[in-house]
Image (cartoon, rainbow, N blue to C red):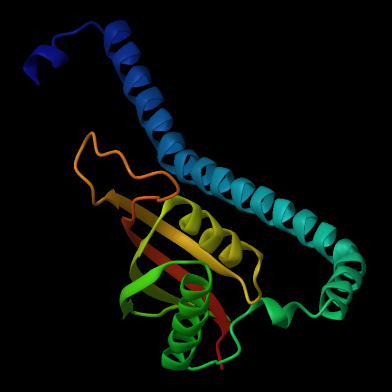
Length: 192
């Protein structure tokens, strides 16, 4: 403090003006910075609301066309593509029976069938069945074609094929070697 008191009056005046300027800048920063941050926050919020409003207006304008398309899909009878039963266990039994028909009707032999845990997906329920069977290559091709073209739709989620003959085995003419096949098949039903 003594050192400041020993300063000439001109230097003290400049120091006082410097302290005053620093205090003013600090006061402006303390007031202006929160105002600027709030202004930036609300500008972003308004821009987001404006984008949402534009998107909702577009959706609203597209509603009549979407309703016409929905009516066209309903007129096509889209329920036939879903499993008939709404209960998970009955849907799994329906898939098992369909797969058994496909396998037996196309030259395969069923080994085992296991049902998986059903998964809810909004209005739909996905039911999964794991099937193990023996079939030749042409029989497997016919089984997969039958599954692909049948209604209600079933989907092969995974397919594992394992040969049951040793390497270098030559099948007699007209005979195809059987393979071990494991399929994970799922179908969808309308929940509720």
